[in-house]
Image 1 (tube, rainbow, N blue to C red):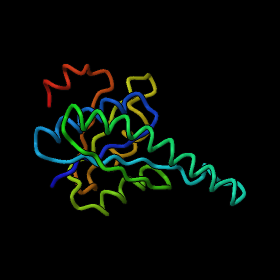
Image 2 (spheres, one colour; image 1 turned 90 degrees about the vertical axis):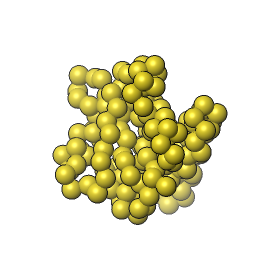
Image 3 (cartoon, rainbow, N blue to C red; image 1 turned 120 degrees about the vertical axis):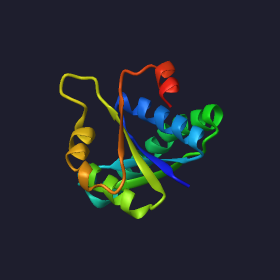
Amino acid sequence: MRKFLVVLDDSRECLNAMRFAAMRAAKTGGGVEILSIIPADEFNHWIGVGEVMREEARERIHAHFEVFAKWMRDKQHVDPELVIRQGEAVAEIVAQVQDDPEIGVLVLGASTGKKGPGPLVSQLTKNAGSLPIPITIVPGELSKERLEAIT
């Protein structure tokens, strides 16, 4: 089964990327894999403190994931899977694509801010020619109605 890989983070544009991935998966018989990345340098504390902070980050990720997963299950009839990796975001996205041969499309949300489309979109599009899958970039300001029409 072809899966749409979407990155879960705290950005506003993440919402439209999630919606797009779920809608496309529902309409094409695919799946959704949600990737969340814990920055490696975020927990450079004493071993015990760092481990507690990592566990708290995982709990926040699971809670955030469940919000999207419930919507995907209830509205799109897609049961997403969650993958949590630790490291630098772009390297971990590329590694996940290489590790899971069922991933067919990477879906990213583009920011609408004046600073550009966001760091993931900027960095990954620079290397798009060498990625083994296509990237779909979803504008952050698309309405739910427009997303439904497009998908």
